[in-house]
Length: 471
Image 1 (cartoon, rainbow, N blue to C red):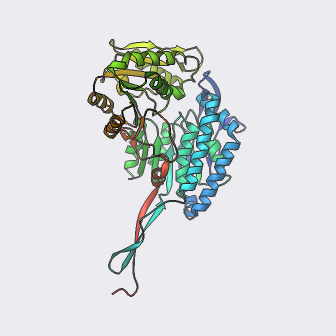
Image 2: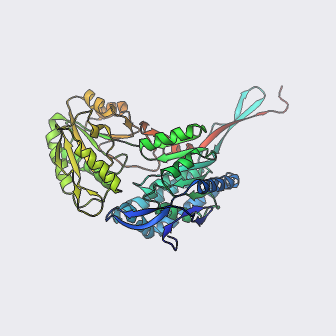
Image 3: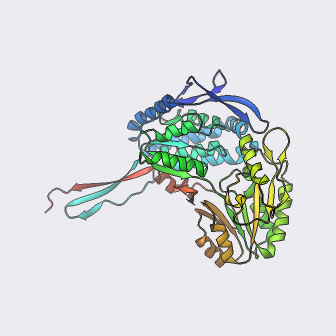
């Protein structure tokens, strides 16, 4: 924080505190205001993007080895400052501290190190003579200035997912974090400024209007957002006028398909972990359970027991607005639905929701079709493989799914027919830096993590040269 206890932008490696409105920063565990953050307008957005544009002129010429060194140093510095980052992350998200320290920050450091190495492994077609008297080669280049918008569920990690591949490929970036969780992103950019030239990583704070200004500005060559499908559609529309590249990692409503041959207790343990981790505020959360009729009641009972055991162990939802939205979904449940546990606010301070299990739902029900982004788990039954696939695929999202079965042939058949960008078998949720993450349909396009994520921040150029003395 600055001396005024107001979080400010980071542009060109320095804090900049524009005059104008600010927004409160609220601890969702208590509802108490812990500080304020600036709201960036047209001048601040333009300054940040012009600064990134100027820095790109030189940074695009750096070698992969130089960028690797900077990212490796950033990963080390992040680990050294883990306690400070955990303080900021927990204050604005309400996450359990051990989750941040033991799981999220180590993953962030690992992902930085992955992209540090990947920077030196960008591949391309071999040079060769494909037309008589001419030699062709393919250059893979950085796209330019990237405008990046991150969500509030994993503020630090999503900033890493954006910044690391952009920088590894030789781009510069302006990041706008979610208005409720900006502090760890500013801290990360301050660390990055110790190892990267000024203007390579910049942060502007603000609200939806700030994000719109960033997207519509003529400078960015690429706009990347992780957020809701609604926000992604708005970004895509705004970027379309400038024919900007877009990278959209959007909502999800992941089905977990449980067949009758599955060990029920094992499946319940894995699904409950994937449904309620981070209080269900995860685009890959196992929020829709599709279960064979023969094991429906047993799995329902097992999931209900696990949910009831977590009532006092989960962190809060991100904001009062998010809590109200989810409570509204639950209040509008149809008469044929049954709430077996949860469905209510926990305590009078903060934004806590009891883990919730709902059964008796139909495919057209709102809570089945819409992403809840909360510790809410729904159950639907099926009696055939074909019906399971239909229930899984007939909804607008296509980010993630899982299949629970001991039949290897069935697992391969079903995973081939599921219309989702990531599919797990007998587990749900693990991610690794080496593998791509991204969805289909209204879950967006483009990939985070992996070599595919790095390639998304590059462009391909064909260069052809006449060969001297060619006949």
